[in-house]
Length: 122
Image 1: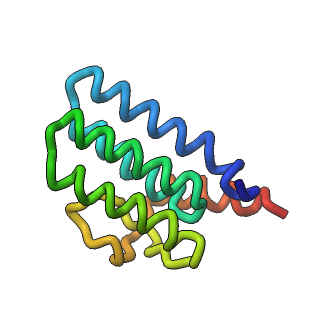
Image 2: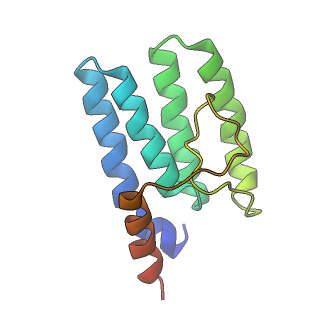
Image 3: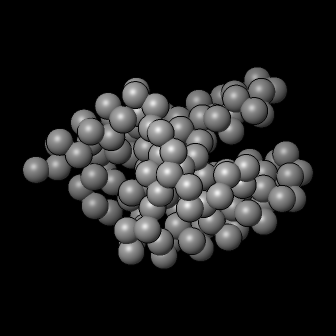
């Protein structure tokens, strides 16, 4: 894992845990929004990018969302290849409700965490 990946992982993990907590509270939409935040944070680290799509895939199974499930399977493959090649649309939230090629604005709180992880690299 890259240095950036190691530094961003705790923030990604925090969002994943928040997603599972929200889902346990019966709030699946809130849960997915936390997974989207995790995706934005981790999408430039291959390991974190694939890991977040895996959690999105698991979420889609629990929600019986066939469209999201199939979309996440494709995104797992795409993330494993595209991230290595640097083909990551900045700010993309990672769900099937948006094309995987669309760049999107990064929320300021997440941008600050990404910058903090990058600044610590070297």
